[in-house]
Image 1 (spheres, helix red, strand yellow):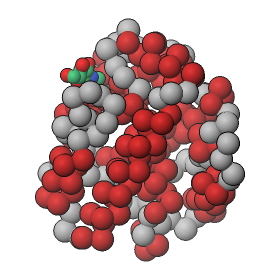
Image 2: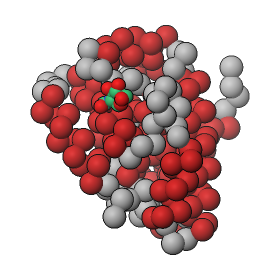
Image 3: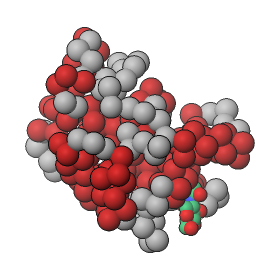
Amino acid sequence: MLSVWWPLWNVVLWFQVVRMMPQLDEFCEHHSTNTMHDFCCDLHDESPQFSDCQTDWHDKIHYTTDEDELLYLYCTAECTYNSTDFLAANRQSLNLNHVREHLENDLANAADEALLYEAYVKCDKHALGQLEHKDMQLLAKRLTTYGCHPFPGLVMECMVREMILKCPAERFHKTAQCRVVRQYLQKCEQRPKK
Ligand SMILES: *[C@@H]1O[C@H](CO)[C@@H](O)[C@H](O)[C@H]1NC(C)=O
């Protein structure tokens, strides 16, 4: 069964991304997770599409540097959203009808469905806004070598963040680290925007 929780795939990996992108300093959400070493929310269930894409892209990008690993992560994200049909043809927006269908088919719980759908709607917009940033445009250039686009990776990162912020209380890991990360993200969201 297709899991809808795959965006929470590998927070640890994503956090390495955060660490290796110091040029995105003004986006505090990118720092949030340096202290994170584990999943904070018990909603994760990796999808077969995600695992397949990881394998594919490990074969295609033999990374030895953080920079190349970042390319691997973004391509894996796009590959996964391609396989689930979440990515619209323009590659800069989500096919929200497909997202909704998946959520309806895969989740028994209407509250979870609504929570996730809202997160996808928010992350769709958020990722589009980040594409304008000059560092993202540099990354986009490097990704074209592999035929990948940065939008899906930005959505995935945003979904990880949303899941930590919005995780239902009974599924949140109440460890010190998870609390710290969540508090950081909350402060980050409340900061005055330029
Ligand atoms: C995703 O699909 C688009 C459109 O078919 C394609 O151009 C792109 O290369 C695919 N991305 C990956 C990572 O497979």
